[in-house]
Picture 1 (tube, rainbow over the protein chains, first blue to last red):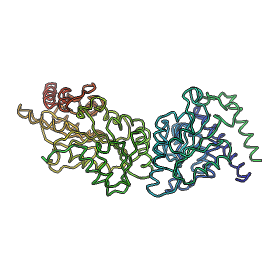
Picture 2 (picture 1 turned 90 degrees about the vertical axis):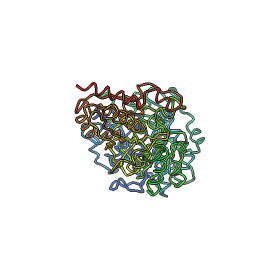
Picture 3 (picture 1 turned 30 degrees about the horizontal axis):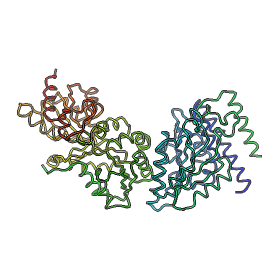
Picture 4 (picture 1 turned 45 degrees about the vertical axis):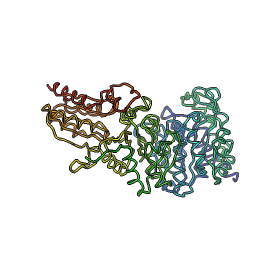
Length: 280
Length: 315
């Protein structure tokens, strides 16, 4: 990928972070940490890789996207808004009455959302269903599912992994946001999901590891996962929870907690500096 | 009256009859194809039949994926493992987004007999009733089951259907002008002193109870309530006004099922005595199906007893 394009996608990710943080501040609630850790991924998927059309959100052959960790929806909403699915200004209604931007992903009223999610562990099954159904129709679109690393403690994830592996769903790509933290502590101390790669491999998946904040690496990983080879692919994203803002990074309390006014001030200052730097 | 067949066997025939010609219909199964009877469809349409293995939560959420792509998936297992184990998946991945997934729970109630309490599902109607957007069907015999399957596949949205293991008498085929309509109960007999409202295989018991009541000079109206949700409010209120007393009968916990649904309508719209026949909030027991039913009071004699009690409570 050209250097200039990488910069554009980095800029897009910074804008996603800033916009979602504004939405969370207005709503006075929402999940910062896991939204920030997938911002770079969403920039690559929504602005480079996925076959989608904001003018025709239900386009039959579009690539599907499921945010199985549905609480990180403000990041997806921001990506959708910048991609043209709805006005960026609508982000100010996030989580409030009178707005269609609900606190977790909702498919019937938000243009561009392919599945309602929120109860952890279900999105990979839904993605497997979509991918198998696409195979029945001899369609070649891909199904992207983003899960958390804490989320894969849910048994249903492995039921889905078993099914997808056995059905050979090479149109299914599971992106595991391995930011290493969950609500009550680190994944390692709460209930270690490791080794994630070997687990997926044992369930007959291809496994790709990738720095989840490196645009080029993300692009390469998605390309590799998109090669049809008879197996679904898990991309294990090495990420930092709260990535992009010094006071949020690796802080468990920003899974869903509220920053102070001072922390907001630092965050916006840092994000504005990133945006200005990337626009230069 | 036309012979005997279990509702699950009739279901299998109906899925084949109405599902096979419809290219959108897919069957997902959790390793019970010969029990849920989805296997008939599977043999005829192997390209639209998938074994998901013993992983009901995954099967149900995969169904959501099929429906999101415009298909009509039907997810199968025992009632306990669809409505019970799959509750969160049904609630969040199907009912909330109102996806067109059909869920079948077979081998419900005490009549799985020897398998015992772990398999005697007496909670499915309650679990499904409290989920918004759900339609719940509980047909009483083979003839009605087939009509219910046709209606279920034609309806756009989530549906839960319960079917049973025991062979039961077919009674609805002799009802003049019988028509299955989701949300509309069927009046099997007119009456003036009390109304007996039943669902599933208790319909047959209730019909026999009405005959016994007649011998005692009691005229019982008889309603087959094949749809538990949306409940037929109009028919219930009419029965309350015209007969002044109601008895419900179901092979389910008396909490949360048909009896509760009828009581909710009665409390809100027209107060008359309501007596409920069902499992009295207890787990079942292993044993011969009909002997277990007797032990738990799911009998025509108890229906007669409750009818007389309801009549005595008038005013």
